[in-house]
Length: 148
Image (cartoon, rainbow, N blue to C red; front, side):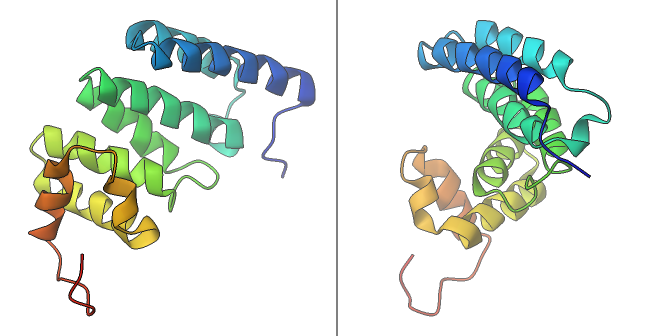
């Protein structure tokens, strides 16, 4: 079963997503979410079958996280996990863990932050608020090397 959208539809979804990215880069997160949602509406059912859904939901979730809409971020990232290459994507696990942390869902936060750490190492936390990695260090064993 193909997981990529037909070329003309893919081009339109990419165009809308790029417009959303430009808005997000300017911290216009609500406008970015609206643009990503416009692209999302074009994805055929079942939406979880398409690779485009994975990156669109990651973009939506990221904009939600950055604007403090943590519940919406959780919904987007949870759905992204069901899409092609969503589960095991370090960024999706990172942001899902951060959203869960912000909602005081610490067990789920530790699970997803831990997955991000296992997949990418400490580097994935480099540009993030240190509270997330500090929290994770209280939930997992120190690596055998003794170095985080």
